[in-house]
Length: 76
Image (cartoon, rainbow, N blue to C red; front, side, top):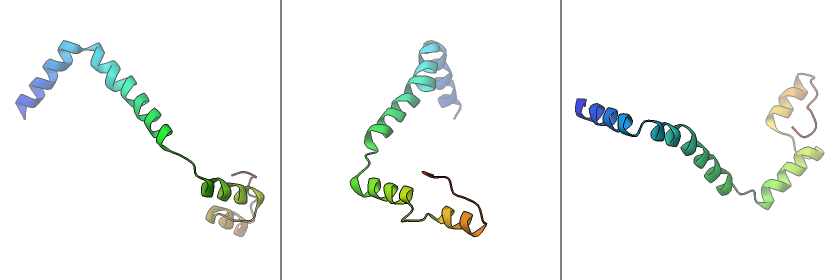
């Protein structure tokens, strides 16, 4: 365990700012871009969203708000 911690410390010490940039800024941005590009919205999802917007289909939260006498905002 101590050897792993020591090796990690040496690597961070040697590469310093590069490691901080890669794992603190570039890596999260890369994950966000990969997620956004792989998250494809198909026709069924688009149709369900339009039906919710028009009011033909109610969400569970919409039913709860209606039961409490609250208005659901259009498009939410």
